[in-house]
Length: 326
Ligand code: AMP
Ligand code: MG
Image 1 (cartoon, rainbow, N blue to C red):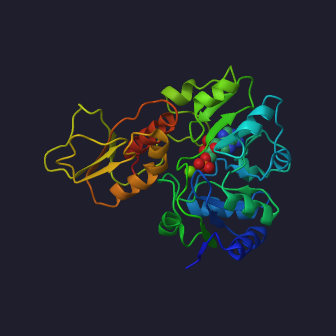
Image 2 (cartoon, rainbow, N blue to C red; image 1 turned 135 degrees about the vertical axis):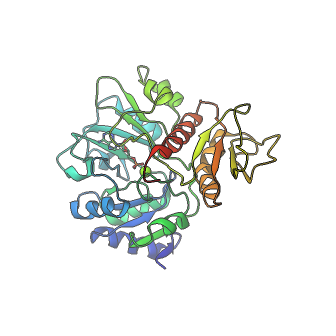
Image 3 (tube, rainbow, N blue to C red; image 1 turned 90 degrees about the vertical axis):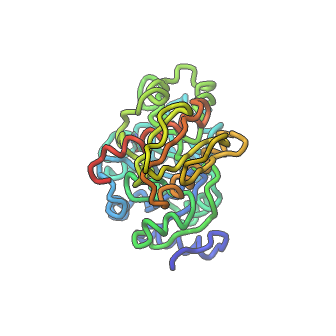
């Protein structure tokens, strides 16, 4: 098996060689596992789209190891500097006008590029050893639940990656927040691991409306995403519950008083902590999805802090049942 322990420096060096030669490496970040390729090698990036069955209209985030490297790929406006200093490395992606060094396939033909410095030491070493920026979406089949452990990648994509670096479970467990600084007003394109409250503290005129109340309409932000095979409904505690004869699983962010009748119950955080809940979300969804249930009921979480991103993922998962291919 090509899963290698990421604490083995030789494995990371080998992974960097694979990237330099145009191959694909799945690697841990603090958000989710990514499927990476040399961002300046269009043929390598094309393989990412093929392996994931990802539509070519969905742009890919470019991962770099420091701010100077970020500036090689994008034109960062003045207001970006304090944001980069405060939130990088970390789960925040900035969308800015692109430089010509970025191949069109990475940005899906857009004139903007999405850039991030991941905080995970393995991701940082991989970028440094490779000597190039790494274009990487999440290492799962398009539209499915993102991987937060190496074995999730192996289950879905084992034939697609030339190597999987195992760095243990992802600490944040949700994708990065995507913030566009390419227009007149800073705008949240996707809620994620950096809370919107923290960002609006720094960017007074932040447009977060779409991210909080609706499904964002950014490129690649398909309504149905992060999908389980099992239909998922978001139901308030006193809402309509199980249908007779249905095998139903419950996903709750804090302990429940009555879990009886459910075939399985997943608690995202025993203490009701939204950070812990975010870190456990995708693993719990996977567990329930593996149980041959008829339905998953998810309790809503408070829409503040990381709760905004958690609800975004649950809504997209629930929208996915409308897809004819699921
Ligand atoms: P992921 O597939 O989780 O890596 O998410 C990447 C997401 O970042 C895309 O689906 C877009 O929503 C966003 N994104 C990436 N590049 C751009 C870009 N150039 N302009 C706007 N959004 C972008
Ligand atoms: Mg993804």
